[in-house]
Image 1 (cartoon, one colour):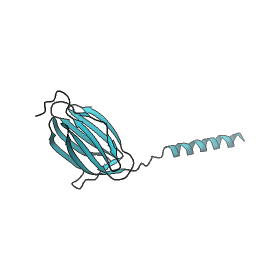
Image 2 (image 1 turned 180 degrees about the horizontal axis):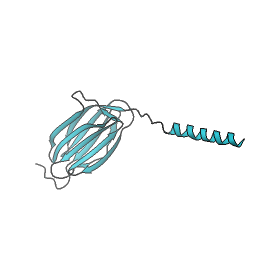
Image 3 (image 1 turned 135 degrees about the horizontal axis):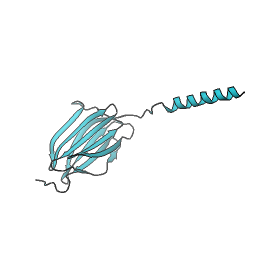
Image 4 (image 1 turned 135 degrees about the vertical axis):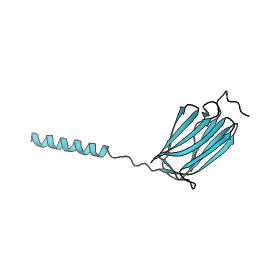
Length: 141
């Protein structure tokens, strides 16, 4: 009897570990268009998305760049898997959107003199809008 309980415990534990190790299949949103809209001395990066899960945005600073990684997304632009525009607004040197890995994209906004600042992410049913502005100390022409 003892042997039976020990075997069922081992089998139960193995089944639990197998099921818990399965990946979570989140529905991936497709980013199908990127538009830059100048606003109040800064810029909005509007990403048009297909229906899917709610992508998560993680923002970090790297030198003069503000980097936003958006997970659960894939870049599916008509012109390819990258978007870049130089000097889209005063104090902003460039905006680049690229595929980071199979399920994430990266938005990199580089300031002319300093790291740009960002506003909270605005989500809609078919898009995400990221807002950036030159940091104080940046001289806008």
